[in-house]
Image (cartoon, rainbow, N blue to C red; front, side):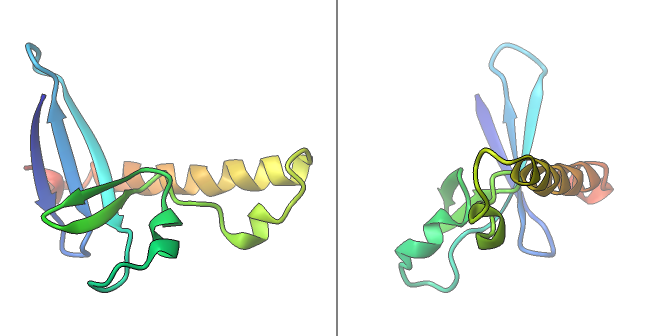
Length: 106
């Protein structure tokens, strides 16, 4: 797979992977996962999926960790299920909105 990256005006990064032997491109949207230049281990968990590009930690939009108010809900309740689904649906909508933006072209 070949990789290409583009940094957007808001600091998010678009990653494009081209599947070897095909014309298929896979796009993903990433955002800063750590604040500042220092290592803050508690903040690495701000996303479930992280990567480092040029020494900067990025988390994939769509893999943000649940906020404390949702995390505190009983895992087996319908309320938590609804709130978790809404939380990740909002991230999917954000990625979809960005993916239709002309500035994403690499």
